[in-house]
Image 1 (spheres, rainbow, N blue to C red):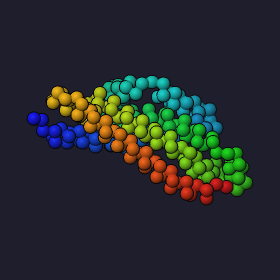
Image 2: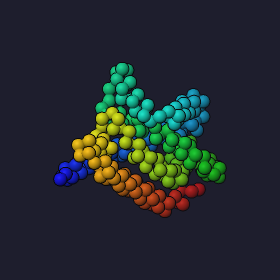
Image 3: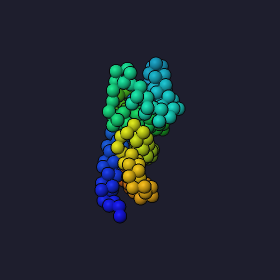
Image 4: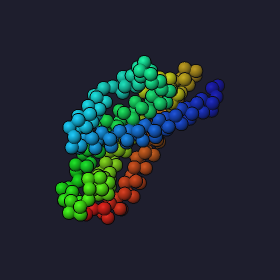
Length: 219
């Protein structure tokens, strides 16, 4: 008779690693998204070119290759990362490239009258973006950011390939030790689903909170 309590503990330990990857990867992806998204709208051609190159490269190549490159190739350039650091960096760069287009599209969706009102109030470029444009655009971006965060959560399973003990890695350990495939993988399937639902609920809550104040931002 297999004592599943210990094996469940292993999977839950992996769930903690998955949550850490998701949270840190999402924060990093958000940073890259705004840097590249705003870069795409820059007045300077070189900035637009660099932002476009980043977006197209990380959207056009495999997350598997990106992860292996970060973990196995960067050490040859003198930058050695732990499996957790490599996973966060690869996931942040990859998802940030997709989210950058969300940032660009959200900002461009704001009507011209908002920019004209800012000009009439003599607001500078930074003041206009910070106080008027971004608060409205961020509300438009939120639903897609939620989808990006869920995609990042699901993509965390690739880190098992570099021996990071996330849920998928631990489920494989349990399968190897017990010879049972169904129970560990049904367990992590449910855990992934519950985590995705938590992200979706959090985004809906944030969207409602922001929607109540965005009318006061419009000029």
